[in-house]
Image (cartoon, rainbow, N blue to C red; front, side, top):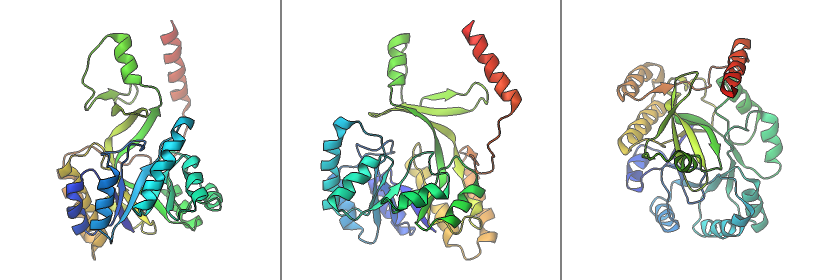
Length: 304
């Protein structure tokens, strides 16, 4: 397994590299979401300075037709600076790369769609060369997908989880309609039923909602040992948290006595005092009749 991290600060690249982390996802103006947007010149400098590293770029939005021409030009620039690969979900991105004959690792990374091996194997025949397994299915299902596919797969290992998105500017529209002013930085909403808080923000592409809790898999390495990449999402992490999390996971991955050392490493993770969660790893998809009735009652009450 190799750690794969979303880079949130170019100046800390040395620290990550020193830990033995060689795979990075870089945010761009075309990224669906990202902890930081890097310019082409910055990406070029990082590639030149760290030739032993693998730099991927996030072109993982869903793009309107009027953006395709500039997206094509941008991909040309990425090819010129020799990036390793692209994380994408819009098949227009894959088609551009195929039409131009570029040889890049095309990692298919929709947020919720990679939930079975059959789809991934079929898409591999169409040009994807790696894939990001959906985080909304159980650990057992993710392991099964790995066992039944032949291309490299990435698993979500740590960080806030994507919950929902809309291409509408929901926060801006709410401000305009309500005539309320509020600070968009670190804005939280609370789910009515679970009482859980979630991050909500707007970027140039959409409105996005993420969990406040960080998914963690630090103590599951024995089960997920066959995964090719473990992804650390640094969105909503400051530099110190991102470095500490990366260091803890790197130490676990390189540990000779993992079963013994993981207890101490878990203690370090808990000491960071950030909310942790198992996400969907040990959940099954179950529709409970009482939950359906509750939702129906709430809808009826809201209509009166």
